[in-house]
Image 1 (cartoon, one colour):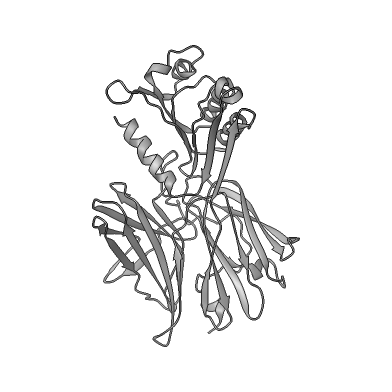
Image 2 (cartoon, helix red, strand yellow):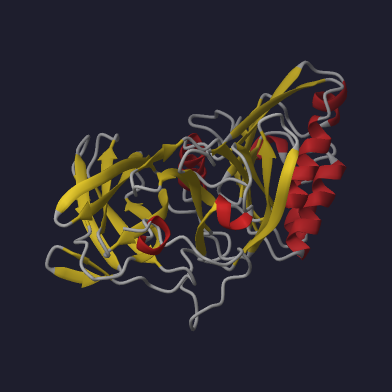
Length: 394
């Protein structure tokens, strides 16, 4: 059984590039909508392979999970689950409970792609994909891979020795194309080679590093996207077809402090990088540079929603009235029983977050002792998104 032709994940035999579409790709969401709750960047079923998705509900209420499968082009991927065949399946998730969706492994060739999970009502989910390879009806190998978060970069160990090779997969759940570069570094950190990456909306690719960098030794693979966000996974293969998981680093957290910490410049830079949506809950907003960055984002067609504290919108220098005049979606609100809307956070494209004590003001930038935390690719961002949506719907 040949590792590449059997294809656990049907690793591609061509260099990654723009994935051709088969008709109109079915992307996960319209521009500005929240990303799926969970993303599994790789699914393989048939040709000896089976994929099972395991979901757990950490919330104290019941919910319904919808699992959608997509092909390399972003078109629906039809698979068999039990006696049913389709590209979308629903699973009831009891409060604090669990559920599993097991593909049947039918077919002489492996059908490959990726899966996305949405949940209604929004709940705190955890998930794993179990990959199994059967040979002659006997289980030959199995690996469990956790669901991935969306991020603009990833890195993982590259095993290219003693019959081992590393494969990786990536999926683009967004409604916009993405592009970037994969770089293979030697163990000493020097560069062994690099190659371009690109995916259409809803697209997917998978391949062995040895296909990109023939003859390269073990080291470290790093992926950096110049546009868009993706989900990544990686596996370590042996020529015997036995495989195991490889940890993929794909989240980032950084903290800045004022005065003199460059918080305002970082906020502007994050707004300028956003591609689809920006949701903002802010107490005090008097910073002209951030206002101008939001105007630029609106001119690029981004969906922008702003929740502002009612008591601050008429204060000296407030940007809120001007943004309203310019047609921004904006809601003035307050807390409970004459309280205030004291949040200070911003969600970009559903996958990046700014939060902290820092108001968008000259005082916070130049005089106050303030903190600002920037996060990417962490599940907690979904909690902020749910909080924003609740405030917006009040």
